[in-house]
Length: 614
Image (cartoon, rainbow, N blue to C red; front, side):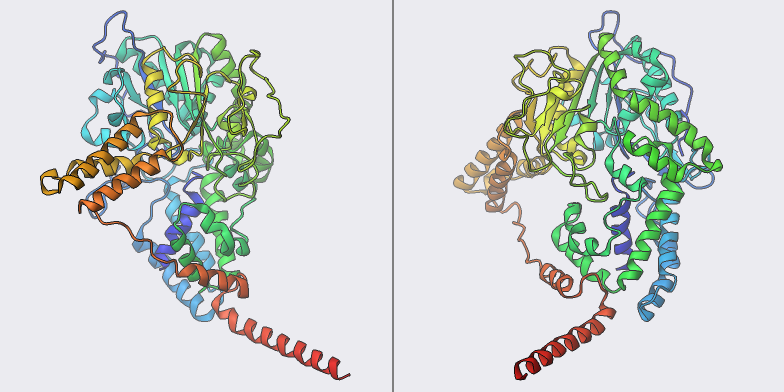
């Protein structure tokens, strides 16, 4: 249980918040790899991935990969969980705390476990990583990658599922450490672009920055404006151009689950990273600790995570919104020993403030700039502002859309609202979303920003429409704006096709000869519906769930799979009952509370009885 709870808490604290950075493993390859000649119609495209979407592995002191029991390399993102050392550190303080129901070193041990696990990503006072990690890079195009490397790339950007006319020797994947030094990341991206241009013989490239990767590109444009001349097209995908308010809240000590009442009354359920039964089970189990002990452990754990790992990572600071930076910097970067880090983060603050101006400069230079934003999902409820702005679960819409106005999640713009036309002067354009939630005319790129309703940030790679749009944009120039193709309107619905594709793969393996004609026909019809649904880029928001249900029914009828039965959540009523009657208190505190409640009830009864007699 201890290990399970610790792992869950690590996810709660860091999965979305948050990687040493190794230099390019070799000098940029100068020989030309691409087979295209003069007049090539394609531009090489560099993917700049998001948070944790690069392979950063744990190494030993000699730089060799550390392997797990299955012989696989171990990822350093977001932490390195070493079961043996963690149990050794946590076991005795946990047992003593449980026996005495007092904090017998448990909170300190928990904070130490956080340091042990996340220390792999710690940095020195210059913002340089000090852990034993190695970045796995791809200093050549996708066409030259081996199976292992392609698997890494396709885990995050599934190229193989969405064929493109862009030649494989024109596709590159820039890897970086999400906890690395931000200035170094910018310098290495510049080196990488130069390498790509040499390998392909082109003097311009396309960039596709995703999420955190957008901050690297934004800084590059500000620090080195000459790089704007190297770009043909830029496609931002859910960019963190003004960071995430999650990080802003964490860096300003505005964290929700440090309140024990909230921890037991909504936090785990609203996380949505956990299913309801698991969340309620954790709520029940955590009560083995008195609430003050658990609160102390969480507070120390967060403090150690922020102060010993996050604030020394200049990449983490790049995710702090501009409006939150000054107060956070005053909190953590005001001491003389943090001066080198503050110099770097101050510089990026200026780049962040100039981000929209720099994007506008790209447009004025003739660079085609597109953006994909997602909306109508609250931020994950780590920080206090999680439900105060429209977002995509990880980043607020204002950041990803470069300034679009929106109603809060679950609300709409006022009935008399008129679009602001901040950046659109064409009176024929209607940039208010059909659901009246978003006014895209206030965003910097009203004619080239595509919006997807109810799409979660962390599931973007499973939205086939976004990926098809990206493949079209990077390979061809037919799509100029949101009006170019009815297949890709400005406002569309989010979707996740991963499970439907898995069902289709299962259906392909069913031997129709062993089925009755009726069952075979039903299965074929369900497969046809699934393929038809996947072929559409504009569809009803429930199209994918309906196709999944039909295919599941057909596969179950064919005996190819069992239907998953929904088990009653026995822990929900128990957790709710415990909170209703005992608040955030632990089990050891409940008998006394029960006695006190009983005494109070008897006292009130007696007082009431005597008042009637009198």
